[in-house]
Length: 197
Image (cartoon, rainbow, N blue to C red; front, top):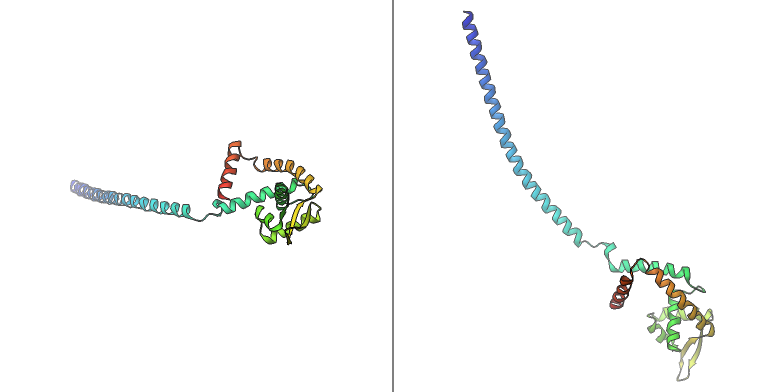
């Protein structure tokens, strides 16, 4: 009787073990199926993510970035140059006033409208510049003998001296403005600016 009970126990244990093994095999099979499915999904997801990242990169590349725009960069460079100019200028001359003095010096004598065209200033701007130069005693004005309606502008002796002094200062201003660039870059920059001006 005892042997029978032991045999039954052994059979039950074996049956339970078999059931556990079958269950484990089933779980293992499901695991591998899930792993395979997951790996497939992962590959697809990676492809989708890659496509999204590529599209985002292209959108960023085509986006209008202010920091990359020529107008914005030129304005920043102009502001830096203006700051350097004002720190070195003589008699409170502005860049536009100095430019006008140089054009008058080159021409010897010219009308206000012609001076505006030479110095790249509109009618209202050149009028203000000429008025301030006259107030500083740097220019002279006289009627055109050929056209009484027109006024001719020339440099006063003080204006001629100012041009001479400011020419030296101007070289220093240009050197400081271009200081971050190599000599070759400076030459190329001047060429490029002339080409787009």
